[in-house]
Image (cartoon, chains in turn purple, yellow):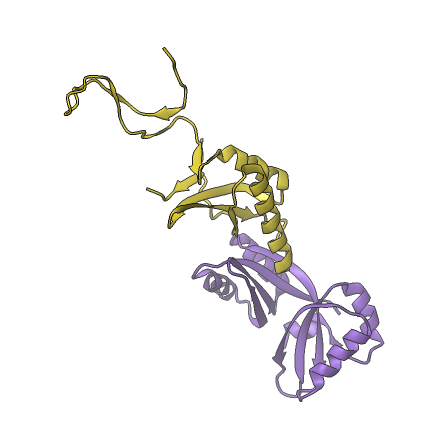
Length: 143
Length: 138
């Protein structure tokens, strides 16, 4: 149920983001989803990739400041109201969302939203009985 | 005779002045024998900054001080390398760290400072005495 997300610290300088994507490209790593949290001085790049452990090792080798964070991915129908429904369920279950980002699945798949929550293990337990479609890490990496 | 060891570096000239005075003249102060900086009238030693950073922790021991002048006021910015082991995925945690360093420095130095977290290995390493201070005033 846990999805591995790669987080990279980026100084607010031109070329830093490009340097990360070049390092991933050089190692044949494909990005599935990404998001950037920015402040005036720095940003945190968050990535879902097809080979998270390899990405972590290679980025560390290139001396980026990188960490792996466990997040959850929920699939929902690609239609208005789908996200509201999911957020209401999370609210009812008292699951506190730190941040989220979303992308559309291909083909038959719906929309996928990646969440970082405050207490992951407790959230996973609650989501098991919620009726929500929580995806496994492997499903995301291979998408 | 009174002597002051102010630690300023200068030189003395015995030449006669163009106005006719023959006393010894002191040239403009060209530097210091220690690291002390004067920022907005306050004496600041880089070693004070270093010990504050070590106390707050969670950063690499590599820092750089940039001093500049904005208008009439001196400004000081302290760059600190994020420690790979501390790096948090949450912006809030990094901002909290920046704020803690800022508060600790302001309390130790008595002037307000700007703190910026930078990527590891971006601050020059050098052998022996590292060039910690970049003074852009003048």
